[in-house]
Structures are given as structure tokens and as C-alpha cells.
Image (cartoon, rainbow, N blue to C red; front, side):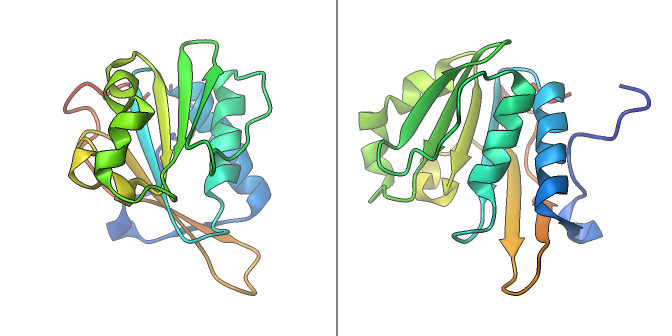
Length: 163
């Protein structure tokens, strides 16, 4: 990937990357073009931080032809991507990790897929350590989003498909 910007934003120790919504979308599309399944990406941040916007951009870059919407009420959306299936989970309404079994959690994690999870903290101890954690922050009155790769265990297990 010589000549291409790295798909992973800076580590937390290096500070936040402030981006506009357009830049966030462009970065998400580049990230989507660069990643390979299987890969688990978690997106954390307050309501309105840009999680679904980033998921939409990643899916577009990954070759998902459908409109990507938030699965807030259905909890899981499945899309056909060019390289694999994409699972988009929104765990905001989950009352506890024990409810994950009803979503087909094990099957989703066993699939050779791109898995994008909003509100991953609701998965508790059932969230695999091997994932790409992204934190988004939005400050009121600030047109930028703070994008942060929050560390993690990328590539140490099944979900090591980053570029």
C-alpha cells in the first residue's frame, strides 16, 4: 500500500485526529477499500458522534451497494459486500451480553465477514479482544469529529484482516 494513507488513525497516545464530517466519510471509504475479512471493528462514542456515518462510509468503500441504515431497533443488518458479507450491529438497546445469543452472535463472529459494531461496550466480556476499536467524539458547537484508534489487539487472532 505504498503511497496510500494508513487505514488506521493515530494511536491514543498520539492524540485525537480532528476531522470534518466530509473528511470522516472520505477516511471511512478509504478504510473500507483497504480492509480484508475477517475483521471486527468496534465504534464507540456518544449519540451523534458519527458512528453510523462512519459505518456507512466504510460499507461504501467495501463495496456494499445498499443504503446502510442504523440497526437501532433490529440490532443487526446484513449486507452483501464485494469481498464478503458485512454485519452491522447496534448494541445500544441490548440489556446485557446474554441477549447476544438471540442475535446469532457466535455465527456472526465465526463468519468470514466484516463485522462493524456500534456501542460495543454492551457486549461486555463476550466482545473478542482481537478487533479494531475506534472512538468517535463530537463536541457541541464544534463542526469536527474526533477520530481515535483506541489501541487494541489487531491481528493477534481471527480478526486480523486489516490492510
